[in-house]
Length: 386
Image 1 (spheres, helix red, strand yellow):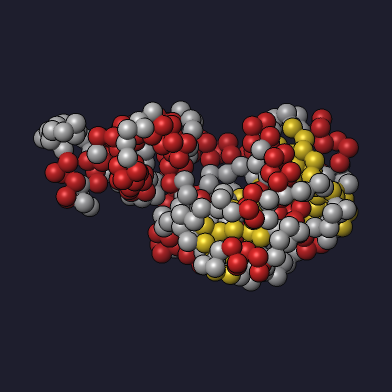
Image 2: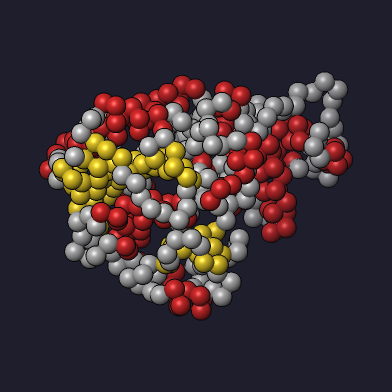
C-alpha cells in the first residue's frame, strides 16, 4: 500500500506537469526497487490502477486517492497503521479523493451514442489485438504460432489472450505481426479503399497506421510519414526495416511551419491520413490517467490544432483524392463537430461511405467504441475532394 501511494504521487505529478505516462513511470519506479518481487509488483500495480480508474478528477496525492477507495473496498483500511513499513494510521477528518469516474466537465461532451454502458466500458481492460502483415506471413502461420488466436471482424486481425508474449516468436521479430488495436486497423483499411499511390500520413507518430497501410498497399505505392515529434518519428525506421516496408519515407515537420516541408506535396496526394492529436478519451482502457491531464483549456487548444491540421491536410489532396480524419476520442468537439465544420467551410469536399464490418455511422463519419465494437474508441471520416 505504501509503495502504491508513492507510485501514485509520481503519476499524479506527471499528469499535472505533462510528464511521462503511468506505464513508463511504473517501469522506472520498479527499476529503482529491484528488491520488489513479481508478486509485490503485481499487487502494487493493481492498487495503483484501481485508484486511477476510480477517480475522474486528479487527486491531490496518492494517499488521498487510496483513502478514497476504502468506501468501495473497506478491507483496505487494515493496511493503514504504520507497521511493517505501511502507511500511517488514518486520522479523523483526513482528506480523501471523491467524485465520479468521468470528470463532470467532460461527462456531457461525449457523442450521443456513448450512453452510460458505453462510458463504463471505457474502463474495462483492453484486449491484445494483432495485425498480420500479409506481405510477410500468412494467417495459417500465425494460427500455428498462436493456436489460441481468435479471428476478428477484419482481414488478418486477431485477438490474443492478455499477457501473451510476442517478442520471443520469430514471426514478431521478422515483422510478420504487429500489435495494433482493431480500430486502428479499420482506419487503415478504410484508407486503401481508393487504391492510393501517394499517401501522406500527416500525424504519423511511431508509424502504426503507416505500417498498416504499407502492408495493405502494393510495393510501388509511396507512403510519407510526417510528424513534429522527432522521438516518435524516429521509431518508424527500425519498425519499417523489421517489416521490410521499403515504400515508407519520413519527414520531420516544424510545428506551425509544416508547409515548409510539405509544399512539394500540395494538391498531389491520393490520400492524406490525419490521425490528429486529441484528448485520448477512446483509449482510457489503456491510459486511464489521461483524464487527469485534460482540462477545458487543453481541450480548447487541442480542437484548435485539429482544425488547423484538418485544413492543412486537405491542401495536400489532389482533385479526386481522399482525406481521412481520425481521432482516438469519443467527444463531439473532436469528431463530428470538426467534420461538419470542415464540410461547411469547404464545399468542394464530400463524405464517402466506407463499407466496414464494424462501427456505426455518426455525424458524417464512423464511430468505433469498446462496448459496441471491442476496439478503442475512435471517430473517423473519409472525404473526397471534388
